Image (cartoon, rainbow, N blue to C red; front, top):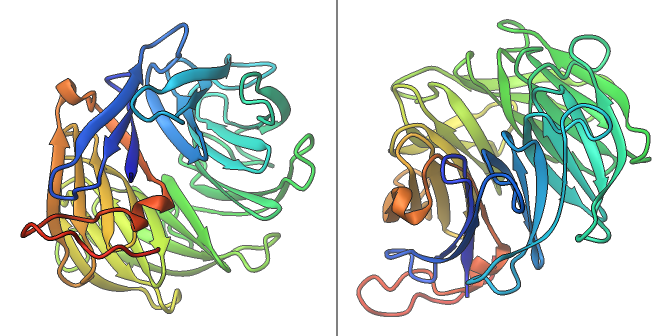
Length: 357
């Protein structure tokens, strides 16, 4: 059975949504509660792998790990928390899990903390790197993407993308970075980051653009290209987070645009608008599996499924919304790859073809 996982800041919740029928998604299960024992106040960051969901909560300054082997009844597995030394989780905002480690970004402590999660019931601190301005440029760190031996971190107040060598998780080190508002790097309030191949795709909030950075040399990243502009034709007002799947980048925008924007990045140095569709207020997160994008909207407390099989003509499908569905301030979404093998929509009454993504 395919599921989407979302975290909601206002509902202080991890919510699991059944997406077997893309026209009628439904709540499968949830777990909520700020403070002990779940520490989900201000749930903002999310990563899902196997039987576990990892949630970073900006108000509780915590990384909480939940057992989701039974999606109808998620349970707490383990927690680590605390701002300042030693964990530096004040304002924990984003998490990326690779192997036995969780990489957590905290925007008040201006830090990336690395935790050993080999025992999910007892996460332990492995290493930390922090500091606003030179040399690490982590002021108001907002997002992290890990590829190979490197962690790529955006920092809004430093207008920066910083790259860290994490080959030794106990001693992360600054490898290289690129920063600066406006020309030539266009990283004013860098927010979301997604790395594919030799390129990092950065949502630059104040620049109103998707900025593409060449990271083929992590010690010396360089500006490659951007797609920018509010309103038609690019609808890039206040971009939040993006994912890149295949030759397309899918970008959530807010402000006056409030759209899911699809960008052709088959040539990352010449990005081109492919299509878009309006969403609710303040689209904040997106994931894409198969022919569908799954979008969450912080301002309108909404989860929506979008058919993106024709990128030039995306179509809105099923929707869930409201605090009654534990979606108050829904912020991030994760859809497991297994969703591509599930039922994708009942439409006219026939089962959609099963497919592998």
